[in-house]
Amino acid sequence: MSEGIGPTPERLRQSDHWDTPEVDAKTNRKAHRTIDDVARAWRAGKLEFPHFQAWEHFVRHYEGALKHDVRVTDTTGNGGAETSDRMPPWQYHGLKLSQARDDLIPRQFQTLELLSIGWTFKQVGFQFSAYRSRQQAEAYALGIIEDALERLAILWGLKQRQQMQKRA
Image (cartoon, rainbow, N blue to C red; front, side, top):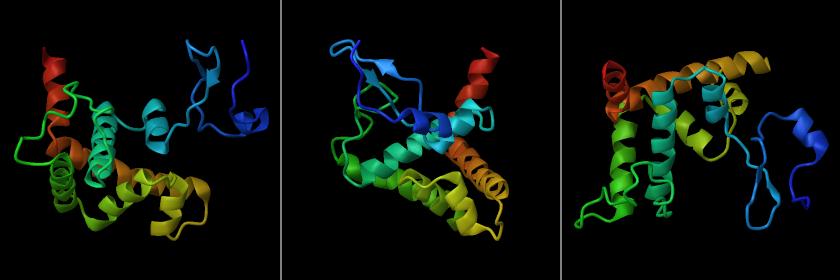
C-alpha cells in the first residue's frame, strides 16, 4: 500500500482531531479526515445523538443559506427535494436558519455560527467567558452548545423522533 498525504506522525500523536484513516479502494491510499469538536463531544458521550443531528442540520442550513450545494450531505436521502418548486434551496435553508436564530438566544446562535466556520470549544469559551483555563473555557462552551442544540433538536423535531423510536 502506498503512503498517502496526511498529517505527520507527531501531529497525529499530539491531536485528537483526526479520525481513523480510511483506505481508498481505487488508489489504495490512506485518507485522513479531521473531526470537529461537536463530533468529538458526541463520540465522548458529552452530547446526545439528537444534539449531534441538530448540529448537522444547523451546518447544512448554514452552508445552504450561503448558496453552497448541500445535497450530498442530505440526511433524508431525497437529494434535497424537501424544498418546494416555488422556493430555491438557498431560500429554504435561510428560512430554517432564521427559525434557529429566532429560537436561540444571541450568544447560542453566535456560538454555533463560530463553530460552523471552524472555531474550537476552547476559542469559543475564551471569547464568551472570563476563564483563563482551557478546561474551564471548553466546559463553558460545551454548556452553551448543549443548550443551543437541545433547543434546535426540539425545534426541528429531532428529539421527538428519538423518543418515539425508543417506544417502538
